[in-house]
Image 1 (cartoon, one colour):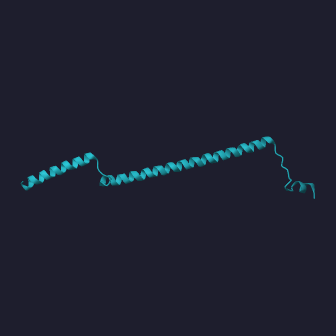
Image 2: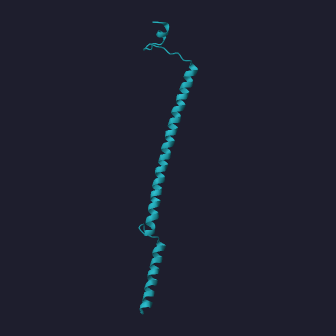
Image 3: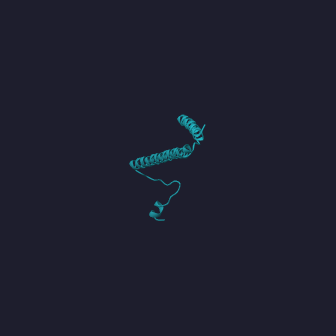
Amino acid sequence: MTKEQQSLEVNDSSQITIPIRNLIAIIIFVAGMVTGYFSTTERIMLLEHNMEIMDVHVQQNNEFRIRWPRGELGALPDDAEQNMRLDFIEEQLDSMVNGH
C-alpha cells in the first residue's frame, strides 16, 4: 500500500483533527438551527390553534345568524312584550271589524 491509500483508510481507531474554533462554530451553528426549528414549530402550532379557535367562533356566529331570525334561539323580552301588544291590537281590530 502506498502512503495515500493508508491515509484514506477509516476504521475504529481513525482520528480526526479539527481546530477548536471550527468545532465551536459548528456547535453554535447547530444550536442556532435547533433553536430556529423549535421556534418555527411553536409559531406554526400557535397559528394553527388560533385558526381553530377562529373557526369555532365563525361557526357559532354563522349558526346564530341563521337561527336568531327564525326564533330558534328564543326572543328578547322586549320582543315578547311587543308581540303581546300586537296580539291585543289585532284582537281589538278584529272585534271592531266583526262588529262587536
